[in-house]
Image 1 (cartoon, rainbow over the protein chains, first blue to last red):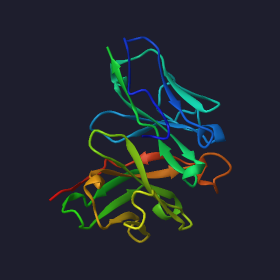
Image 2 (image 1 turned 45 degrees about the horizontal axis):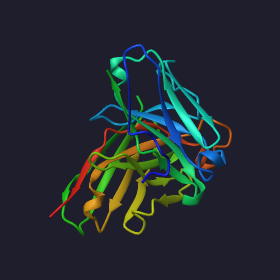
Image 3 (image 1 turned 60 degrees about the horizontal axis):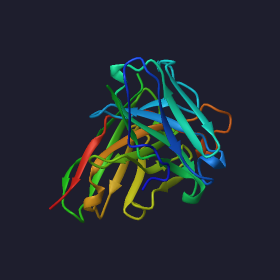
Image 4 (image 1 turned 90 degrees about the vertical axis):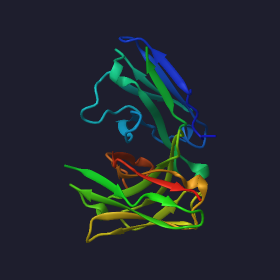
Length: 112
Length: 126
């Protein structure tokens, strides 16, 4: 059971907008820790997608955006493309775990 | 080019040991926070350990007392020594550079994992 809760799967048609939630608690996201997002295409290594709640590394399309409010965070993907089909993980830190990193369980995105 | 390359994975019996290596290029391991993250077959990501640039070390409870993270500055390489291995340690092990782009970079919780290796597979089975 992950400390951060994500929906197991989401789907959308090409061109649509999808969001992936990441629900935490007062000991992690709600404590003010930043949330980061990683994209993992099956069979490959994770890749940093969003850092510091809403910042994109160089090379990540602006179709990807992140937000955080209270004890939750969200990843939004607009203009869905076939290449976005992947697993997405949120990550933060948790004070009840000595302030060490925690990941969400991951969300599988299917582009219909 | 900034790159991480893991090696050392393989098949090991329960109770056995294995040492993973992570060779870095394009940056200096000892000047960065470096982590190991693992992924069991069909499962999500699990943070395993971190070594700070200053040398502080932390572990997940699931591996504490059995795994040891270290680095060799002369080889610019990160290591993970894994002892007393269990079936539940079976996973792909990734090394990752931790980066901080803000001002409070003396606190670990401002860091994120910006560069990842391709991973090395560890299978613990008799």
